[in-house]
Length: 418
Ligand code: AMP
Image (cartoon, rainbow, N blue to C red):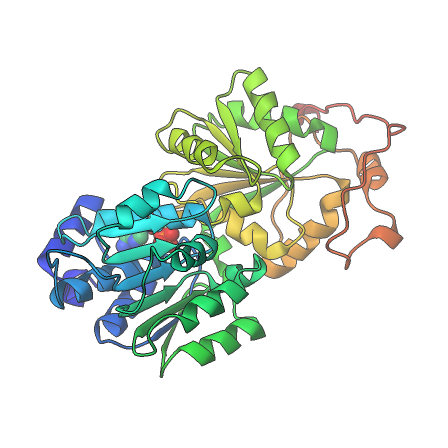
């Protein structure tokens, strides 16, 4: 299947050629005709499957064919609601890329920065608005945004909206948009609250489902490194050097941890920075930009900050800490190996994290192979770091237990000796 066979107009085909896209991904192949036909869509797909283009391309085509780029004030005709600022910026960039020859105006609004540039840009109206819920509500209440001419509404990452506590805002926004509209609803998972919302806002939707969360992991080369918490930094440096890693996303659980890892890497001469919720939006965008253009070798991130980050040619994802929610593991490693490319994921696992590893293996339906290395954790050290039965799961939200200082530091055992 080619993009030509999907009946796309020349200005879009030309842009896709510039992007180097040769054929549609499965979600695009299935969704584009449905959207072009004017149907509502329920898309079960996560970031990394090409879902942005699956809605952006037909939206550009519909708006272009049906009204085009009229002069004068532009009413908002398409709204894309997405949970994080990073995703909003990324979606806006996608509209810029795919729509470069279409001539429609698009704008992005998100919180954490001054609203001034956003409202200034909206002054003459826009065709397509990409927004996070909080800032959109804010600007609607201030009278900067009017949605009464809306034709297409996209709810992106609906399950994440629920996780992040935005669902009430989302429902309020939906009450403000015209009932007569086309709705595209995307979610990686379908918990009851989300399927209830989908039922209430979609009209006779066509359902499209691609790569369930547990199978995305299959095309990524995964391995686990058993290591004591205190040796994780040394192991990280070792892997960066041994594998000559030039662009890697490193995940950890806490904001403080992210800063500490980035600092340690810099001390060792590796260009690194951290992104997390405590950093200003500008600091996050700068770090992301530097990472994308190759100035940074390593970007250290927490789960929320990294959600949906789209970096081409990301070869390695390193889980410095294992996530306590197994689905996060799949989301994390999905940052590499995008749109069919292959990728590599290394995961560090200390004694406390073995229970998390078990849950992850269960979710992905395979045992991630362990790899020998110079900082390998002895069985004795693993047992001393492991939580006592009382502290063990299923309490997934338990906090990190500080390492006891009476534990013997495991001596690095070079691989040749093992
Ligand atoms: P998304 O799931 O929308 O975040 O997209 C994941 C990545 O796949 C992005 O880097 C896109 O630029 C890329 N991508 C989307 N569609 C295609 C395609 N048809 N061919 C190649 N890459 C694509």
